Image (tube, rainbow, N blue to C red; front, side):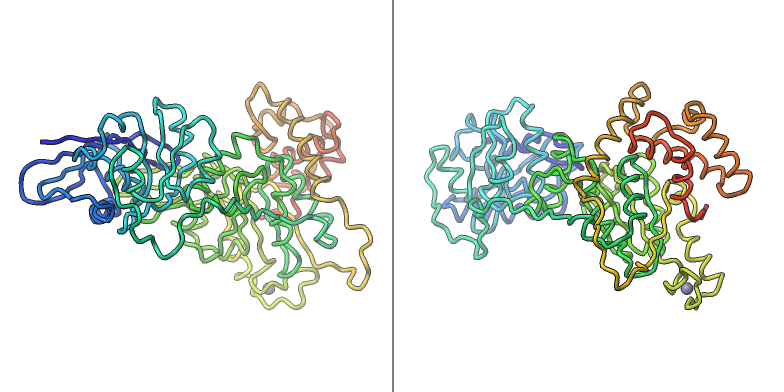
Length: 510
Ligand SMILES: [Zn+2]
């Protein structure tokens, strides 16, 4: 009985783990089996590996071949283990010296002609491997630009299984037919397409812009209400441009999620927070992640460290809205599947947009609105409860009235707004160092009541007494007042900040 082996890496969510592969060639009828909790896609690896090796000129054993993957307790998914399976069999056959592979991680999907195809999730894999006792990593050449993002790992690139054999001194037929679609994209550099636009581009809407700047500074979730065509989407899509830039660790975290989703090529490594805008017909798996096997990250995870924008929020399915509760509370989402539960990070800022009523005309005097009162109530009730509880800012975005008048002052640019946001955030972080909070949105009600100046508290009490504010709205207004004060850089909030804060909650929906 001949034994060979190789190393590879699996992923559960963003968590990588080393997989030890062992191949056994034993007497018996020709049969090829892969054991150790493979998913359906991995079971198909048998055909790809056999065919790919044959294309490289290898005589496949006419006996029993078994590949075991350990740890057997962890599920293995996808096709990124193909090349490692091939390497383990080749070493069992003695074609590659088994000693060569003992400290080498092999990654890559195989095509039937032996071509090595790129894999998703390479970035989190390499970031993990960097801290392991691994000497070298064999990576698909088409993943080269992604691999070059990680320092401190010795990487070798292959585009055909035969190249792997030649790397270890074996004879191979590398000149096998290549895939018709060019997969060797090593020469194409990343082409990041992050252009979030500038707040300059949005005409007027100073109130909404100020509300969004406050949201960015204090980490507050926002609901924008207004009829169609008032620029709610334009405003929201420019939000990442006024948020504090991502730190280096956050950039790699976001890039790892994109690597797993297969979209890193479009974005590269960037300090601009991500922006996700799922359509209101989005399914629960599309929002929170899922799909076959252990699934893929959903919109809430792709929005991690950035913005989740839900246009026409009341039109989302009630179940889809309910699923936001978990990530809003914990900053993570659990995707449960038959083969186990995967946790993905999902700490985002929520921006929702809604029409003032189902027909969209229920603003101003509301004379063009055709909605019945109960339809209007039902429309907003869909957002009720746990979601609205988390929204600090509810702002109206109304049609620009100065039609025909040229706007000569476009207001501050995104860069100017961001500069103030970054400063306000650093003030809040310094204040909350003892508590470990990073922004005002995390401040507890007890802290707010203890530290907010008494004149401001008196104003809150007056607003409560006149039912201008609800009890829950009172805490949120105080948080906003602290953020407005941080933006003005003046130590503690004044009654003027409180008045502005109450104005940022124009509609008390809760
Ligand atoms: Zn209406």
